Image (cartoon, rainbow, N blue to C red; front, top):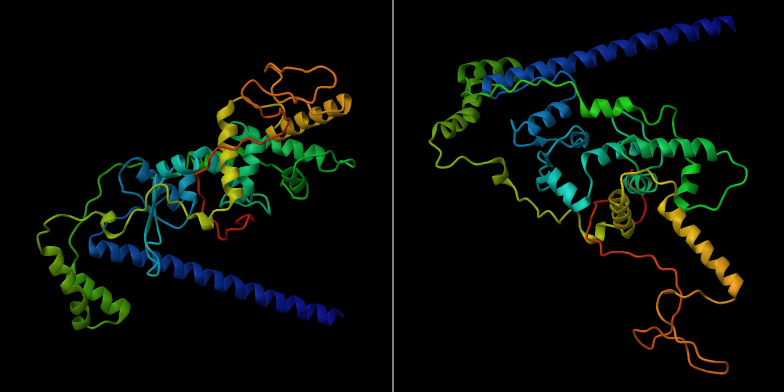
Length: 376
């Protein structure tokens, strides 16, 4: 046994050494690629900026300060850092380039930066693990149920979860809360430092204007020869047409948006890709946030359930349905009359009903499917 243990320990040491070697090699390759990319940009006369921390944070800052026309990225964290214009599918030959703006996101979906950061706490991001099983749609439903400024609603969620998930007698509650009971919320949720990281990231705040230069042909010939093994003829065959085009006087300088079509602001996905659950979640989230800034003592669903219980109790007491409009005049007939009570507006009978008021919804949110399941 001791011999086997020694062999296993020796094998483990070898594996650890090999792992460290591979990690160092990968890091070296990554650093080398970064330096070569910077060198190539300099040779082509393209200005660049090295971010002290997150690249998306730096791009968002340049966008906010109007030093750039937006950010080309597939990382949604750019919105949380304050990005205003995002170009997607830019390097995908099989897709149309798309431009998204924060103005459209806010007007069409009703999602401003604060709400997007709160959604990151629930769905997860680079800075927080989120809650396993919570996607964008469930996150919107949670924000509507536990609303409040910034972390107030999320803190209320954590307090409720801590105090009720281990209860033996489970009270009657909405489906969302029953679902949340089965999930795990990590300790320290929500961490205020995450908000700080997104709102005040470390970036290069220089506002020095970017300067462009002409490509350096001789140095590019040397670079391609050393790095790529290209002959001078091959380099000239590729670069000379580019340099010739650059030297021609342009009639009108094209903007980046000249190379693709910007979809109208109401085209955030199609109806077939937007479930009714998404529309309901967006609508309810907007309604709750618009009601008031104060933290309610009970949620809207709990208020509806309470009202429904009161209706049932009244039905049990009087043995009939309560009128929908008790303030309307109702003409009562004497005993034996077969006439029904009618409202003052017409001959329709007064019937009580519990209805859920729903305004027309035009919001759309892209999902991976048209089902009511979440997108993780």
